[in-house]
Length: 224
Image (tube, rainbow, N blue to C red; front, top):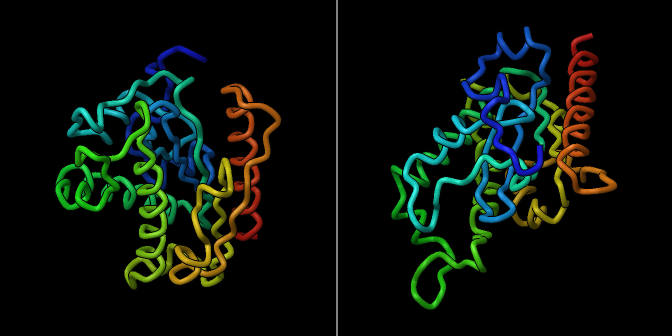
């Protein structure tokens, strides 16, 4: 699929409720992709994405945050989040998309004010790449999981044993400082690094499928 559009990928374009995900045999996961060229981040309920998702998650593009391309070779999986159940994975995905909307639309000025700036007062970049987007995504993952964990109405979405949540990172350093950023809010979240021998889209597809199967087995085991 390298160099091609992903417009024909079936299943990822629309929001998928718990019932659909269970019936289709998908694991309770959320997939986070990053754009290799720009640093922008995309969230998905499935191990793929479409141009429709990009339209939905980049509603106010500008010169600093242009609507990214759907070319699959420009995107890499930054992390996969295993939740203990589908209710939790759906809520996590919704939380992440809402936070993206706040950053890009509702609280756009506040978000921009907190970003590292260059000498011209614009969001710092190197070439076309702006690292602030992946950093903000990590912060939003932490906040979204914290909200699920501490909101009484959603308490059932995460088991009492928070070890039921595992985050698989493309590189473990992308999670940031665990002691500083994770442990004060979310103790005992499992963090692992995705094992890979190369860096091709085909290999990544296989790895994501394997992670899905492992997560499904873990979910089935917890229900037994």
